[in-house]
Length: 491
Image (cartoon, rainbow, N blue to C red; front, side, top):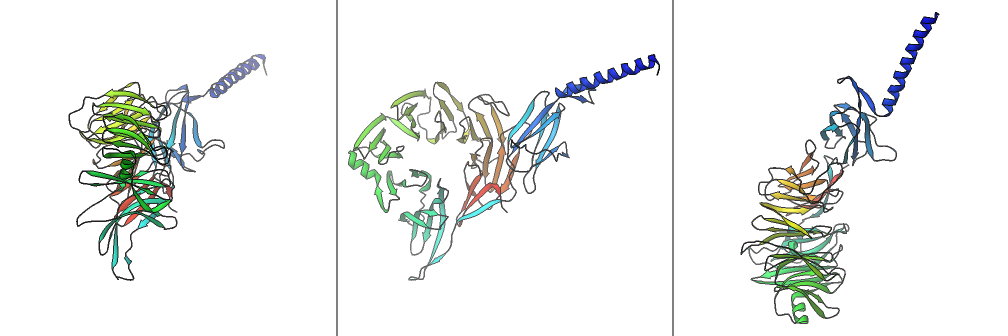
């Protein structure tokens, strides 16, 4: 080989080596060749965390069989993607699919950490079913109708009110154990013709096992509170009379709450006085006076007084803080009050649809035309239903994560719902469960591209929603109570 030829071969080999080495270096730094732009570009990635095992990932319609969680991670990482808009679909047999148009940016990983796939055939269990019982002595059939119920946090019992009809019609309040089928009667009252009664909405429960229950009965303008204790199930105490007599109160009792973690101690609204009464020490303590209503959670109390001033109060520190004074009409009713789980926020909804949100040391926020609301379990968001039938999520603080949201940002989750629709947060605080008529909507709050919403329909017109990780909803009708776990597949 001639010297000149060897030199040319060497130069070509050197150029090839340099190009290959440079390509390897660029590759190692995340560069890939973009055929459309005809240049090397820095790549990005996608990260998905899905609630089910072995989900199927599709990118621009192509199935990615190797897109599976790593050994040390529950997430799925797709690296080295050219900057572009991708159509992503996540599927699993017999499950609703999740899909979005996703933007991949250079040197960034776009994350979706709260993807939930729900089975199309969720797990369903009958909890309480009405059956006709035939009495052996009278030969009369007893018919039963379910009025309302409340599940207990012990996951084995419900408090249920029924209407029983035989020789008379009775309202019956009882605790039913759906594990062993046993029941304990709390209260029974004979109903007059066309009389209706529902004790469930105002029940106060002492703990997860309902060892003590307070309920109230109103006749005319008089409300009487009763105390039932599991330790003495046949002895029902007139708690209003007991408190009034023991502590010699002159004003009628408007409201009673269990004092946290102390048996025999209660918070009461006597006339306009907010008081703590303690049967153990036989003493009372007036906290404040001149209030319209109060709400309590843990050791925090929030109230609105006759001057339309809103206060917070800490039972442990025995201190109150003014939050705001509202400019309200002379006559109004309170439709809903609630305290955030972290007890740092308090919300008030009036009957004219005016919604107020209070936080210590901050100006209150006001929203008009609100029908109902619910705080998220993380206390960072609140969902509310408007009079236009929209469900909106409002951010109460700056939130960083997959999506960055600023305090005050709002996301419209669903439109066209009835004003009777109900809503609750799913446990991950990134999804809402909505009930409207027979239809259940399970909707994410991530509004990048479309909001994925799964729709189920069951044979119920009324549901009770909970925010646990199973996505549990309870269907109720006059003959059946059913527990539906949206997150579990019926096999």
